[in-house]
Image (tube, rainbow, N blue to C red):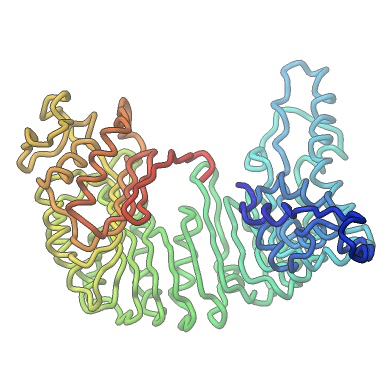
Length: 533
């Protein structure tokens, strides 16, 4: 992204020449500051705002231009440090090459560790230490493997097994460190003591980390905690450590989506006191954790956002849920809608219709079908629902009509589509310039052109949208977009203007990799680059 155009217009200043024929006193010579480019006269806070539009590599180049640019860009450059301890190369089968490979691994660690060490050991850089507010430390994937068929020298083995020790001790120098992310690290008492020494630490993100048993630790004062990870390596957490991480007096946002750690963490949390400030909860609930989750939910009176992770199972309670009078947002399976939304001020809902069965196997799932009753439950909120997202949505006229009927105040609709199989209609009849020959009753759409058929329904008026809708987003669920062909630009343009005629409030439409937005009466189009998102 480039700097705003207005910034460079400041550089274009007309140059007036003085001549004796002017019969005027020649201008006095200006100081070096007056002769400098106008951009240097901008207030520092304006320059800092401009630098925020730059990519990190470009920001480094800007910082080398002059002292003013350096002083105003360093706050962004050093606000966060990312240390990626690269994975070592796969060791060769030839034993004679093992030593050379392990030495290469040492060299791979050098760029990360040496630069950070030199940064914190340089007295002239002390003013920059306090600028650092976020760290990210990622260990190699090999850290998850405890078995190696090769022997390495003792000093190299120490470096390979615990590369994080080289940089972890430097954390204590960042006295203003507020956010820390650790990935694939083995955290023991040493590391927790260092974390406790950080006076400003508020947010901790632990990804696929291992938790060694620790005791006699003071509770951290975290406002945000996230524990996540995949199922590729077993991990566990001690119940005492949950008390250290989750301090009820400070915790505001909690994410527990590590399938190995979440059950133990929920069991410990269910026995703790109330969390008066906790307002955001994202959690993965296993069958054995259902009771612990419901008890923990009763200890969160100020809960505003509840996200049930998609890998959870049906956790419909046998009795009414706690009051939860502040709940505003729900993201999860439809089973809890009738218990959560009616009578509460929920104004945004995200539903996941692909439900994991009780067996909790990767391929053992079903699709929730009773969407009409779900829309009725959502409409029973005490406030108008403005935002709705449905994941794994199979379009039918009945479902679309239910959304428009029960949620007339909807401003934002995001449909993540799946397709019907087998094919129900000829593929070549999905798009028509007049939209007059489309009649699919309430059947699902063709598996190769669900999005095109849905847009045709909407543009032709065969399927309704909420009258106040401003943003419509259509995309495919992963694995359901094979062999899907994008619409031609003229077809998209025709549909956009048909939609605009029927829904004057509509100002943004996203269809797959294209986004259309309106300014006044004119629509513009851009191709989305999901690789940079």
